[in-house]
Every structure is written in C-alpha cells, then in structure tokens.
Image (cartoon, rainbow, N blue to C red; front, side):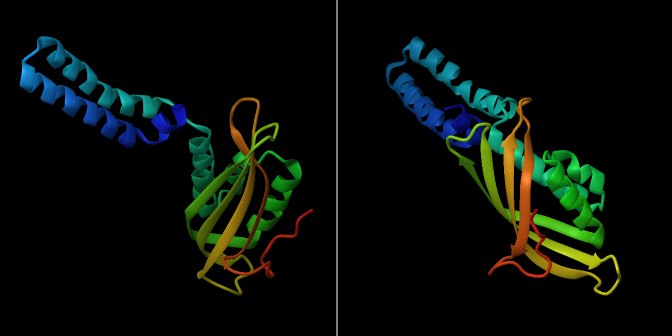
Length: 185
C-alpha cells in the first residue's frame, strides 16, 4: 500500500477525486452541510497524497537515486564519487581498473528495469538498464564514439537501508559479451 502511495500519487489522487466528485454531487443535490464538509475534508487528501509521496522514499527510488548519481559521477569522470554506491571490494577494484581506460563525455540511462529477488536476505535487486555513452579511449585511439551498452547490476540492501552494488557487467545491447565487456572475477 505504501509503495502505491509513494510511487503513484497521481493514481491515488484520481481515486480521491472520484470520491470528492461523488460527495460534491450529493451535497449539490441535498444541500446537507455534512456532505459539504466531507467534500472539503476529502479534497484535502489530494495534496496530502502528494506530500506523503514526497516524504516516503521506497527501495525502488533509492536504487534509482544510486543509478543516476553514479551515472552523473561517471559522466564527470569522477571515479571515486562513482564508487560511493559500490559495496563489494572486488567489484569496486574491477570498476576502478576499468573506468580510467575511458574518458566519458556524455552518459544517459534509460529503460531501467528493477526486479527484487524474493526470499533473499539481505534483500537484493537485479537491475537491467540501457546506457548510451559518448566516450573516448584514454589512449587516444578512438575519440568521441557513441556506444550503447546494456548494464546489469546487482544491488544489495545494507543494514542502514541504503542500496549498494555488489556486482556489475555491461555488454552490447544485443548479443553476448564483446571485447569491452569486463572480465568477472
């Protein structure tokens, strides 16, 4: 219930709006003071739904925040800031070994699919997203090349309720691994 309220306040507001319309119609037909007050009180639930949605941060929103913050750090070529959301030391080292090979100019993420792993403890989520990167090789052999990649991340919920990456890989949008796909340890 909280997830619906926190992530879809417009849907909740439309449902409340239908109830308000019914109460308002009843008040217009009868002139009953109680229906008028109920209409006003119920109408006040609409901004309350948006306030509650803003105040409640769901696990999905925390994961999305981590994805966008990491994407911004990678786009700025700030490798240390990009590692803030990586929990596993081996994964962190693998990423720190890979990132300096490229100079990023533009990075956008889209088509983000988050699937929570049921029954996992601590709670995990598998994230599959498309990233469009404009980058150059640090060696200078390729400059400003647009590269679309499919990025697969494994997030794990930490004891402080934050979500951190425990594993990642990336590959072309279609097909299997290529020469730029990182080797997994």
